Length: 287
Ligand code: PDD
Image (tube, rainbow, N blue to C red):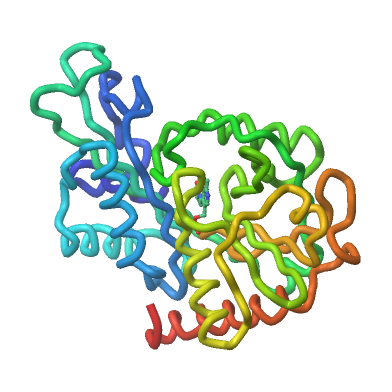
């Protein structure tokens, strides 16, 4: 039985209960993070906690824990759960209120919840086959940079992709390919890496930022630039990235092959750099 953290207590998952009046339940009024763990070490923790802070600020919830308290709770959850590699999920909602009312309660008492699941992460081998995707109009709101728990559009978009026999939806807004339903987007062209710039149409992914960092450190040309839909169609390579997916090469989009229909050489180079980085994290030599 997994151990979870809820408002100051470590509990068996089935004993962790929230009131039905919690605004996370009633309104989806909250934010979250998913943090990978490699060799029982939290990956890019400072960046995840910074993004959490940005999301909390954006929806006007006062961060209920200091950075040191977050670190303590997250490390404790990793320690109490199975698996050297895990995915930690944390969620902060605006908490319960006396009655259902859209406007904020006078004195909100945020709900803090953390859980973790063991994972077998996608390595170089599992990624070799590539994944398929479809393009869909982005039906989400105008604050996609906030990691809000209100994920109904993402859920419907992903399910549409799954119903079409594919793994992910690549979202199109105003003619531009922005990101996946739960992942960031990269393309390559003539050996250069391109990803859309951060802004309100996409989530500033931690995996995305690490890929840019690794590219810059290893002289792989990269730029943050809009990707019009025709450029997605003509790209040499397309990748989707996230904390849980790592770097997935996309080999078919809308039933057409990407490039020659196989994961490309830039992906191979990057996944090696990424795996090397993860190993350094496992040895405690990187964060
Ligand atoms: N989702 N874009 C969206 C819409 C996402 O939901 C995610 C991650 C990303 C990638 O961000 P990161 O590299 O920081 O994981 C981009 C998580 C994994 C989820 O919802 O489960």
